[in-house]
Length: 159
Image 1 (cartoon, one colour):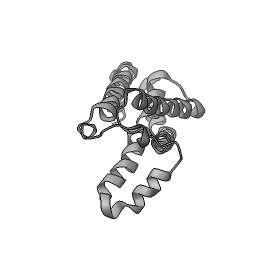
Image 2 (cartoon, rainbow, N blue to C red):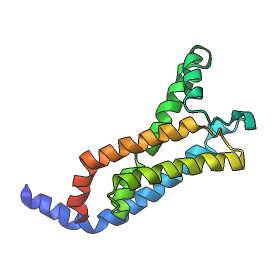
Image 3 (cartoon, rainbow, N blue to C red):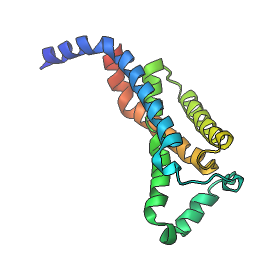
Image 4 (spheres, rainbow, N blue to C red):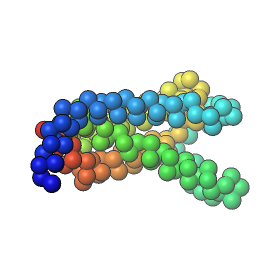
């Protein structure tokens, strides 16, 4: 058993970082597609009135209106925004070797703000501060997963 593990590690180590870079590139591509080009965006008519800069107002309003708009819309927005950013810290840390939790959080928050600003400039989607907060929560969950699980596994493979 131990010999088999050593054999796997011997062949997996050289591939760990390049495969992590590939996974990061695929993740970024998928995130860009989901945020800017997903089919659900086609029916949305952009208006400056849709921009929300007051934290949690739209989230609480959507929760109160769940009976009218449906629970799926509310929960998919909340969990989708969180889930979208969970992979970012482990992939970024694994690909670049960046270990600082503050830097990982900062990069995630800046990426989220950039997405919202791009939505505003290109008039695609709904720029919303709640999305930034929920994305940041996803980054925090991703950092926790990196610290608790993935970092140990990646160290075995990469070093």
